[in-house]
Amino acid sequence: MASIEEGGGGGHKKGPGVKKAKKLSTHLDMTPMVDLGFLLITFFIFTTTMSSPTTMELYMPKDTDKDDEQNKAKESGALTVMLSKNNQIYYYEGQLKEDASNFLSTNFNPATGIRKVLIDKKKSVIEAHQHDAGCEKIWAKNNGDKKSCLDKDLVVVIKPGELATYKNTVDILDEMTITNIKRYAMVDLFEAEKTLIDKTEGN
Image 1 (tube, rainbow, N blue to C red):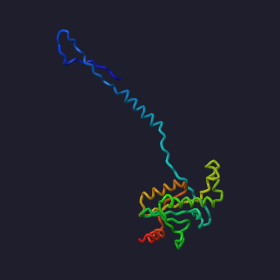
Image 2 (cartoon, rainbow, N blue to C red):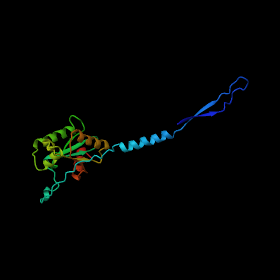
Image 3 (cartoon, rainbow, N blue to C red):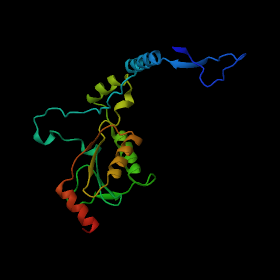
């Protein structure tokens, strides 16, 4: 609280008929202000909602007696995207053919680049989709929406090369968000893919 202190009136002339002036000084007590500050800090700490971590759904393959079917995604829904230097992108659908006839290249052009490839791939997967037992869990999580599992077979495998930039990696993850692709993974290049990229770029 503020208080007023009285002090002597130094510097005034003395004499008959002259009244002695009183010098007033103020002193501000900051204790209540400090208490209020701590109360506000405590209030905001207890009322602030902490940001929850964003997680991605992990789909585990079903057990099977056949070795060739274990951990194998449907080839019709798989798209492998490889990042290289100079904003160059290579991709192929399903398995890479021995003659590399399905090994194609593109870039980050919004109209004709990787975004168009992703949109077209998603569209073809949705058109070829057939409901199965795996759809039931997805429907349950989406209030029975039958359309929620149409793209469940779509899997994009992202493989940044040694010459790819950090910006390229961020850009391709942004494309996953823009095209609303739910299932994607980031792994290393295979040796065959590295060799094919080097050959294509003349390294």
